[in-house]
Image (cartoon, rainbow, N blue to C red; front, side, top):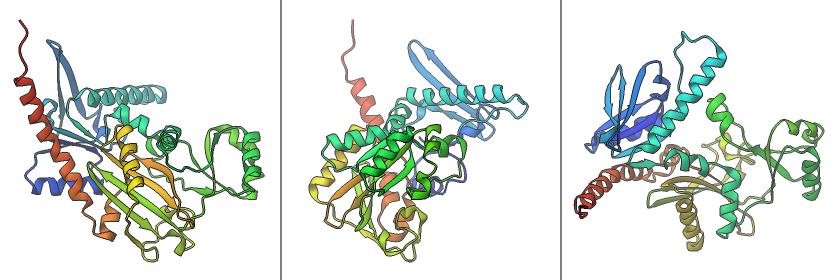
Length: 338
């Protein structure tokens, strides 16, 4: 059985679920917002073996029967509305979130894109950049700081040609679920308010000139490099996520073999089986790594290019049952002690 962790309005999850059902897969769906007010979860260790069950109004889920978990985009848990103390609500939310992450980590099956502890580490921007650089990828000159003096020095060093972006996804994930913080060019007006950077960490990078941008999506063993001609329109010039699909051409892209091997190695060393990688191809042909999103969107790329990305995701999730059977057979063939 494949478990999808996401909200019920998630179009990606809905699309993949329909395709999986068409292939005969057995599915379950969990929305973390049901817990703990509307769902009961029990994790028991008997004889050293873990057993878990999820009980909710729409049915029980035997978590021992899972072959794969798609950690798609679950929201944080929601306390019972009868709990009115904000401090207590926050404590219940944090405790519930920690337990659910622990629960999924303790579940012995394929997890896409990775078990939550691995996923959270892979989402760290400095970790990504350090690994990408170690593997030989070109990365932008980068400063992560809340020190106004360091920012001013970095700004001068690059003749004012720098951009800013969030240092982590926490704002979008945990607090403002509908918020998007785009990559922005740091203007002279912004520098006039440089002291405000002390409120928290911000990523600053030297501006990388673009011939085109790449979104390289790796799903299991499949790789889908797509070139985004973001410089064609002013709207997407600095961040293609402003989306101007009608006027922004997108095509499949042939990666140099060495770059493809390194990107696959990056995903592997981060412990992921899925990753959406953003890169820039400069006017002089350099491939510059920007970041990897361990759980990025991909259906919009499939819709525009026709690439079979959702089929690849189904293949990956269904591979969990094959791995489970192989693991069970391996255990059955092991010699018994005594």
